[in-house]
Figure 1 (cartoon, rainbow, N blue to C red):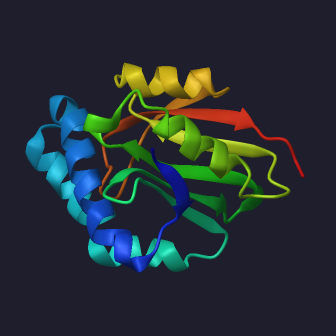
Figure 2 (figure 1 turned 120 degrees about the horizontal axis):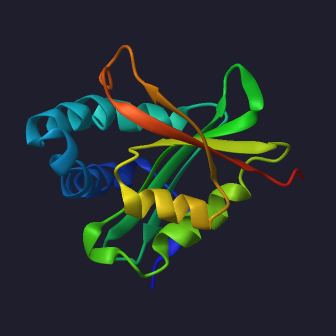
Figure 3 (figure 1 turned 180 degrees about the horizontal axis):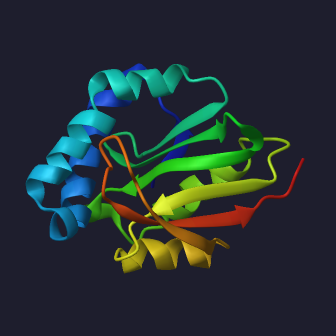
Length: 167
């Protein structure tokens, strides 16, 4: 059984390995292995993961069964609108799909941001499994955009939003 908890520095190597497996399993078919590796190297470098642990207004969670990390998520309040939470990552190891890990991580995330009224995310529109997961958890599509800069330059994403109950 996996338990959701806040990530620590000691988790980062396992999180990075989980992200490598999940990214390649999910995105190689859309972007090719080299582009996926470039995204991983930029977004999930040890330094990038460590910065997330200390980011103000954020939550970095892992699902841990005492032996392995089966899932992770990172969300942060939007700088320009702190009532909005951006879900930057929610990944479950491919071997752990359909065990409720994503659901449990998401349920915990929803409680981590008192006063927030909305959660927003970007998802690859061809990733039907992820789009369906988010829709089942109350997210609605808002728009499709193409990133114009950075590592994601040229990638099309579906922006989805969900209203949150304010506490």
